[in-house]
Each structure stands twice: as structure tokens, then as C-alpha cells.
Image (cartoon, rainbow, N blue to C red):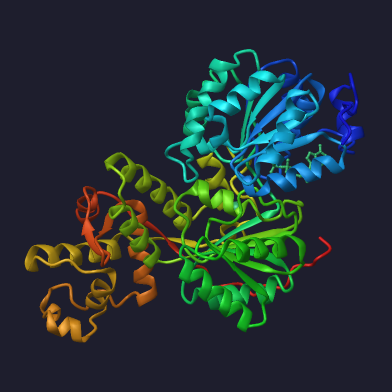
Length: 531
Ligand code: ADP
Ligand code: ZN
């Protein structure tokens, strides 16, 4: 392998043009690169596909020494390094997948100054031997990729990231650049504190992904709804379908395959080799659908993913944004579709209640879930709500490319139905000392003489049959929206409904409860592929 630097003394623009073959910088790349080349620390927030890699790769090529890149994506290091080498960049990696000999070669290259970029896993940096190794070479910069992994409240927390605060203590003169595609302003502050990036300049790109059409639909028969979507709008397209559980993944992959959509499963329960094979088929072949748990996707760079579908509710808006962000990296029209139902809320609450985490953890998980529910139940622009969540002020009230903008839901005064539902829950609790799930309360309101109604003599309650103005589905919508607004809560294994501290405001008529009425679905035509 060659050990001569590619372009000695070259400027950032030279490297961009001659090594990477791109005519111009994108967005804030130039500012970020100049700042880091000049020795400054940086915290970079850029959506997926925004071009974060060049922000540290180019400074590493311009500054003397080796750029050390800390990345949790061990499985992708080989690919990243191979891609750089084909461009003539002297890149290598150190991680637990290597044997002694491979490691020794890379270490020697680093010490001899023959590497422009060295990728290491975060756990590796905590090892004294690795630290001593780094002392023996010249480091041009540290790049901390997927920096949100340092956030203990985030969904990608990696304990090893906490140790990265030592970089600054041990190598105070080496500039550091931390990068992430997901962070609210709270996470941003947390990253800066935990990584001791107190003097870092913050570069924040807009999180808008205008080519992604956001859609959230009420869940009836999710797999069937998904199939309809794929047949009408995405025939032959590549896409990702997220499910919460391994069983859900297996079922959905099988259902799609049986119905003529080529689909592969991906989850942590599969054999490593099967998983790797499915991942590499998805990356290389056209028109495959990857049905996966959220274990799939971080760092996956497939530009033509035309849709990301969620068959279960994500745990947080951050997760939703990050997962949907894997669609349309090439900038072409893409769909983010989510099916969401009452059962999702029940299930997620149950997971939070039964988790091992402490009270603070649960409170945090609940807040994340609440924000996600609010996004699902909004009557305003989804994109606007999403951007506002990340602290951005969207331009204009309507984006024109989300379901609420394209097919606006009606907003209606649901105060009376809300009162009826809450008083049913209240009566069951007060008069009978009983707690039930949403189904039973709805049956009572609709006046249904089911076995369970008869058994518990719920037909004797004064609220029996007072809710026939709405259909079962609409009542479910009422329950969901009361949950989202915090006027009602679910608890326990059976998802029983309970009142909250604010329920009485609704019952006493002190607040008006505005609700979302789902618009009838519009006939959709397959999207033109030449867009
Ligand atoms: P991120 O890490 O932010 O998700 P990448 O660094 O993988 O994004 O970049 C996304 C894609 O955009 C890559 O294919 C990359 O080569 C391309 N890209 C990045 N910067 C530029 C640029 N200045 N001009 C053209 N293409 C670029
Ligand atoms: Zn919109």
C-alpha cells in the first residue's frame, strides 16, 4: 500500500474536488471544515444524508497526522475503510473483529504516520494499550460519530461513550468534532457537557427532509394496510418496515413475501450470518423490503430507500425521525408511513411500567412517548410539529407534503364524548372499585350486551348506552387522544384505563377538548418514478 500522502499541502477545496470528486461543498460543510482545519472544536448536527463524513474526512486529510474516528458501527468499518481506499485515502480501522496480525499492521501504519484516517470503536479507546498506541503517533483530530450515543436518555445510549470525555484531558491540543443526526436542544447540551465540548462551535443544519412525505394512519389491519400502500404507491421499490418485536418482524416479512413483495427479516434473534447476508442483499439488490426491528439501520447508507413504514409506534420522536430519515437520501420523493392504534399506547406504557429503570428513567420514557403521541394526534402539519420538536421554526404553517396538509383532518369539539368516556372510567372505579381496558368502556358507552357486560352488570351503570353517537373506531380515537393529551392514562398488564390529575378539568367542563377526525382516505395514484 502507498504511504505517501495523497495531496501534500492541499487546500480543503482541492481535496473535495480531487479526492472526493465533488465540485462544491454542501450546506455548512465549508464552514465546519475550515473551523476544524484551524484547530477548533465543533459539534455538528446534520440530518442523515447531509454529508457529515466529509466534515471530518477532509480536515483529516488537510491537517498533518491521522484523524481518529470513533464510531459505534463496527460492522460498517470495513466498508467505510474500503470505500476510502478506493479513493486513494490511507484509511484503517481497529476493532474487536480483527486478529492479532491485522491489528499489528494497522498499528504500525499509524505509528509510522502512514494513515490519514483511523476508525476505532469506542470501547477500544478505553483500553490503556490503545491509548499508549495513540500517544506514539500524531493525531490530527478526533471525530466522534453518532455523538448522541453519549446521551443516557437517548435510545442509542452506549456506556463507552461516557469515557470519551478523557480525549480532551489526555490530548488537549487535538481538535475534536462530534457529529450526530439526532438531537433536541436538551440532547445537544448533554453531548457538549459529557464530551467536555464546552468551547465547541455548534453547527446546526435544518432537520427538514422536504422529499419525505410524512403520513400517520389509524391502525386497523396494519399488514394489509401496508400491502395496499406498497402495491399502489411503491411497487418494486426498496424500503424498510419497522416492527417492535421479533415475532412482528417474522410475521410481516412472511406476509409480504406470500403476497408477492420480496421481503427479508432482520432482528437480533437471527443468526449473525443470516443477518449479515440479509443486510448485504438489501444494500446491493433493487426492490427488496427489509422488515426489521430498530436493531437495523444505523449507519446504513442506501440512497434509494423509497419508503420507511412503521407497523408499531416508535418510542420517541427522535427514534421516529432517525428511522424515517433512512428514506430518500438521494433526495427523490419518499414516504414515511406509520400505523398507530390504541394498542400501541397500551403496550408502550406497559413496557415503561415494567422496565427495570428507576423513576427518572420512567418519567423520561413517558415524556418521550407523550411527544410521539402528540405527533400522531396533531391536526396541524406533521413536518411543522416534527421540526418544532427539534427546536426549529418551520417556514409557513403548511408544508404541503404530509398527510395533514394534503388531506386535512377535521378538528371537532370532542368535549362531550370525552366527558362521557371519563365518567365511565370514573363510575367503574368509584361505584364498583373496578378498572377495565378501553374495550369494555367503549362497549358500555355503546350499550352492547356482551357477556362481560352482563357478567359485571355494567348495563346497570347510568352511562350504559349513552355514547351511540360515535362508532367503535371513533371511540377508540377519543381514547387515544385523551391519552395523548394526558387526560387519561393506561396502566398494568391489561392496559386498564385510569383517570389522571387533569381528568377533572374535562369532567367539570373547564377545558375544551379538540379532537382529530380522520379524513376518508383519498384515492392515490402510483407516484411517477422520474420525479
Ligand atoms: P451523513 O453521514 O450525514 O448521513 P454522508 O456523509 O454519508 O451523510 O453523505 C451522504 C451522501 O452525500 C454521500 O453519498 C456523500 O458522498 C454525499 N455528499 C456529501 N457531501 C457532498 C458534496 N459536497 N457534494 C456531493 N455529494 C456529497
Ligand atoms: Zn405538512
